[in-house]
Image (cartoon, rainbow, N blue to C red; front, side):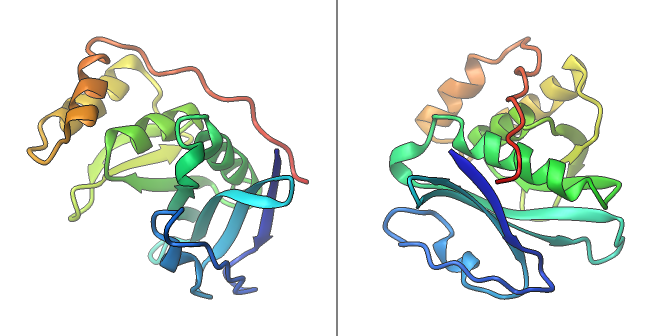
Length: 177
C-alpha cells in the first residue's frame, strides 16, 4: 500500500471520491484542507483531510478520515492516520482529531493518538498526538462512548469487549511514497 500527502491546505488539493463507496466523500472536494491518501494499485482505498487549528497554528487538525466500504476493518484508516500524523508532526507540536464513534476511537488509538478528556459540542471525543496513552485515559474515553444513547448494536458489542482493556498496540508507521 502507498501513502501519499497530495498537498496541504495552502495548495488546495481536491479529491473526488465515489459517495457510494466512501463516507464523507463530499468533504474531500473542498480546497480548504490538505489531503492524504492510501492507494493500492493506484486506486484510493482511504483518504484524510487536515488543516491547522483555527486558534493555535502550532496544532494540526485531522478533519475527516474515510476508508472505502469494502476495506473497513483492515487497518487502512489507522495506518493512514499514523502516516499523516507523522507528516504533520514534522512542523506542528501536536495533532488532534475528533471522533464520533468507537471504531474511529480505536483506529485513532492504533495510530498513536490518546484521549484528551475533551469533547466537542458535536458529541465527539478529542484525541491528540502526542498524548497520555495510559490505560486510564483509554478507558475514560471508552466509558464516555459507552454512555452515549445513540449506539448501534455493533458499536455497543465492540465497546462491551473493551471493559478494563489497555490501549491497543500502535500500527507500524508507513513512510512517505
